[in-house]
Image (cartoon, rainbow over all chains, first blue to last red; front, side, top):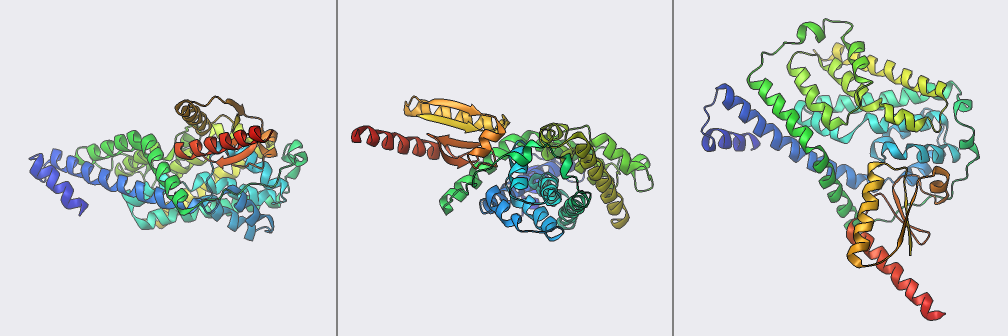
Length: 316
Length: 88
């Protein structure tokens, strides 16, 4: 249906000819932009509605009785549905530790939350389909579970700033929501996100459409295709110091793919940009000693590189 | 009335502060708006996800409520303030 709308607009209203370069580019742009914005609105609405059922305090209670491994898995999954912005990282971290949630389980939560990002999910879904979007979630969850489990096994409790253990957290508050509240919250969040990301998404899709219509494909294949073994670590090395939101980076990723960069490499690049950010590390420095921060960055970097290789291996 | 915005100063916290001040202006209510950025102080309210809205020491919302909601909280608080005055 979206395709016929895009066809109608391109070939009837704009009088472009099918099969020509401007025709193909405009058609691709109109189709992609409608699809992505519809998906963005729908998925963000559903995810936000779901999130009203998992406020941080409830997640904390759900996790407080959990042991390692099962706890890591629960934390990684809850990390996806618990509303959380990086600026809440410190109070949340203290709240978790104080209520007896193991350090490794807390890390699983801290990792999966930015790693599995709903905007990224939507764009992957819209631009590449279900299987890749599913693999993105799965690999994010696996990284969160493994990294948290390893950090737990290393017994790094001493590497957390001492004051964290001495703070008292008052019994937390679980906000009460009616269905009307949930709807209002989800809807205002959709508007909020769309207002913030639309320029990036539009610019990215515009660029993608231009390349789709004009540039030769496989341009980057020689440098960052599946044949180049160093492409994945290189992509991660470039991605770590860059800091951007998922909305800004995905259109770029889709352009990279179009030019012949392999999927694993592109995905590793995206995860490095969104999950490993300097501002978040600076915030976490308030509760973690430098050694643990370095270890955290190291474990994440290695896991992301592994996922990159894995995808390059699995997706031909 | 004392309104506190709990948050470490991120964009969402600034958003909540701006929205709260807007509601106060529209209602014509004068209130003291204080930003609480100190983490132990935030935790003392039982709040782990920021931003949060505290009116007269009661945690009213976590996240960013709609303008209508904030206005309802402020009106409710005005009402209970008036009742306490009447009792005295």
